[in-house]
Image (cartoon, rainbow, N blue to C red; front, side):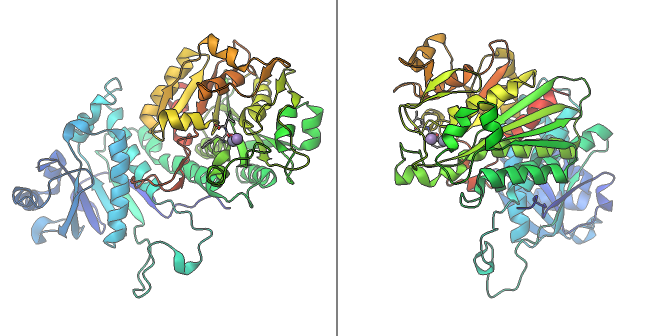
Amino acid sequence: MNPTEHALKITVATGAVSTWKSDALIVGVYEGGEAQAALSLCGEELAQEVQQRLQEKWIKGGLGESILFRTPANSGLQMPRIVLLGLGKKESLTNESFRALGGHIHALCNKSNIATCHVLLSLDTYQASKKQSAKRPAKQRPIAVLESLAEGAWLSSYRFEHFKSKENKEGKEPKEPKEEHPFKQLVLGLSGEETAQEKKRLLSVEQLTRGVAFARNLGNQPPNLLNPETLAQQARQLAERLPAIKTTIYAERMLVRKGMNGILAVGGGSRTPPCLITLEYRHGGDRPLLAVVGKGITFDSGGLNIKSGEGMAEMKYDMCGAAAVFGFVQAVAEMELPINLVGVVPAAENMPSATAQRPGDIIKTAKGLFVEVLNTDAEGRLILADALHHASSFKPAAIIDLATLTGACVVALGSQASGLMGNNPPLLRQLEKAGERSGDRLWQLPMFPEYQEQIKSTVADIKNVGGKGAGTITAACFLSRFVEENQAWAHIDIAGTAYDTGSSQPHMPKGAVGVGVRLLYHFVQKNWL
Ligand code: BES
Ligand code: MN
Ligand code: ZN
C-alpha cells in the first residue's frame, strides 16, 4: 500500500481577480441571498449579474447549495463559468462548515466537469466565523478557514478502491467514456496580506491530509492482509521513505526478553506473532518529547471470549489507534516540523486457538504488575499496558494514547466525539481545544479515584475487566496503572469515531475516518512549536 498521492492539487493565487485563469470562479453567498463582499473584486458586470440572480431567488444560500452559470461576456474575467456557493447562515459558520464546503466544491466540480477552479472568499466570512476563534489574532483567521476548506476538499477526494476491479469503481458510467474524477486543481484566492509563514501553513494541509489518508488506508486494509507483521513492514517502509523517521521493531524474542507478556498473551493465539513498533522522529533539538501510542489489534475476534458474528465484522478497525500514530508521524515528518516525537504501536491479532490465553490466566506485565485476565476480549488494555510502560521509558513530557478500546464508549458518545481521560488537566484542556479546532472532537469523562476499586483483583494486582458500569472509565483506570503518577498522560477512546458505517458528510467517507491525525496535528501546532 503506497503513500496516497492526492489526485487534487491545491495552490494559492494573489493579485487581481481579472488575472486569474481557470474553468470556474466560485463565489460565496449567505443564506437569505446576500453575496459576499468579495464580489466587488470581480468587477461591475459580474456583481450586477449575481445581484439579479439573488433577487430572482435562483439560490437561497443554504450550506452547500450551488448554481452554475456562464460568466457574463463583458466582465473581463478569464474564468468562463461562475459558481455561486451557499455558505449557510453568516453567524453559524465554523471551521467544520468550511470543511463541508470543501467537500461540496469537490463534488460539484467533479459533477460539472470542472478541472480547475478559483475560490474567492472575502474577509466578511472570516469575521463571521470569528466566534470560533475570537481569541486568535485577527490575521490568522482567514488562513484558518481556508485551511479547513482545503482540508475538506482533500479529504473528500479520498477513495479506497484498491480492491475494486475496474468496472465496479464509483463514478463509472459505462456508456460515457468521460473521466471519473475530472476535478484536478483548487486555487485559493488570497488577499495578498498573508505572511510567508501563513502561506506555508496553509499549504501544509497537503501533508496533513496525506497523513489522514494514510491512516484511512491502514484502517481499511482487510485483516487477512494487514497483520502484526505487515503492519511492522509498513513502519519499515515509512522509515525508508522518510529517513528522518527511525523505526525499531521488537519481534517475539525481544518481547520475551523485555517481559512484555501483555502483548505476548494477546498475540499468543494467532498464527502471526505480535510485535512492538516504535517510530522515532527527532527534529526539535532539546525541546520536550511527545509520545503517542496507538492500539494495533489487526483483528479482534475476542479470543476465547469470542465475539458474536455481527460484533466481529467491524473488528478489522481495531488498529485505528495505530493508524492514527502512523499517519501523524508521517505528516509531521513530511512537514519537517521542529519537534521531538516518538510513536509506539503494540501490534497483535486477538484469536482463539490452542495457544490463546484463557480467562483466568494471570500475566506479569513489563512494568511488573500482575494482571488477572478475566475476559480475553478486553485485550486492548493488555497490549497498551506494555506499550505505555515502554513509552514512559523515553521520558516524554506527555503521552497520548489512542485506542478503539471499549464498546461502552460507543454507547456513551456515539460517533460524534471520542472519549477523553487522563491525569493532567492542562493537557486534557489543550487536547479538547485541538479537538474543537480540528473537528476530531473530544469529550472528557471523569476518573474519580473510586472507579479504581472496580478493577481490584482477588488474586492479582488488577483484573482486566471492571464490571458493569463505566466501562470506558474503568478501562482508562487500568491504563493509568502503567504510567507514573507524575507522567502527564491522556487516553483517547476512539471506538465510536474511528470508522463510519454511513456518513452524510462528503469529507467523512464510509470506513476508516483517520480520526486522531488532525487532532494531534492541531495539538502540536498550538502547544508544541
Ligand atoms: N475492540 C473492542 C472495543 C470496540 C467495540 C471497538 C466496538 C469498536 C467498536 C475491545 O477490544 C473490546 O472488545 N472491548 C470489550 C471490553 C469488555 C470485554 C470489558 C467491550 O467493550 O465489550
Ligand atoms: Mn476486544
Ligand atoms: Zn479490541
